[in-house]
Amino acid sequence: GEDVEQSLFLSVREGDSSVINCTYTDSSSTYLYWYKQEPGAGLQLLTYIFSNMDMKQDQRLTVLLNKKDKHLSLRIADTQTGDSAIYFCAESTGGFKTIFGAGTRLFVKA
Amino acid sequence: DTGVSQNPRHKITKRGQNVTFRCDPISEHNRLYWYRQTLGQGPEFLTYFQNEAQLEKSRLLSDRFSAERPKGSFSTLEIQRTEQGDSAMYLCASSLGDRDMDEQFFGPGTRLTVL
Figure 1 (cartoon, rainbow over the protein chains, first blue to last red):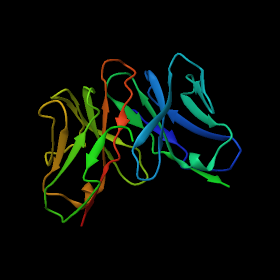
Figure 2: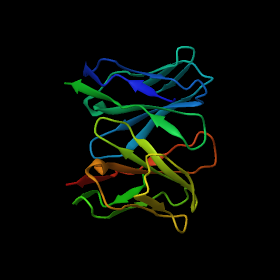
Figure 3: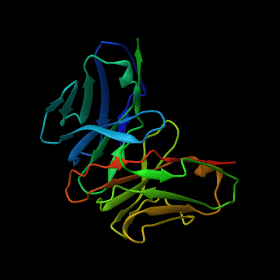
């Protein structure tokens, strides 16, 4: 069945780069997403990548997709304390159904 | 603030009671979704509406759960005869629903605690 897996925790120092990894199982996934959830708030879409792309860059965020290995990563450059949050990887085949991973908790140390 | 609001933000109830949550989506959004999120997990899909029609329900949505979106605007999620296992964060999201890349905007959630 469909599944999305992520590592649970990541700790980095302020100013370093963070890399959050994700693997998914559905080879027919069309869109892959990264959402951010801060305490007491709902999920916020950070960025997404279409399955025919390898990379997408958006300011401090870089998404890399290895479709062969079904591996997605999110790199945050110059990580700030305000980046501390839970980051969810998600995939969909288009349409209504989106499958989320369990989330990676990013701790940024000052 | 994404523009999606949910009420109440917190609900504590005793086992066996009924509870109802409300979601107000972004006004021009046609699709509305309900998810459940338990501690340490990502959101799990429960159901979604295209305008007022409920088009899909997850197997997670037992007979005790019912959702409505009567006028295609706000939605309610009711849980009857609550059980301790229903304790979770219930998230609502909305989207335009007019394309495959359908960005969902999430509300802050309603945290349910069943004692």
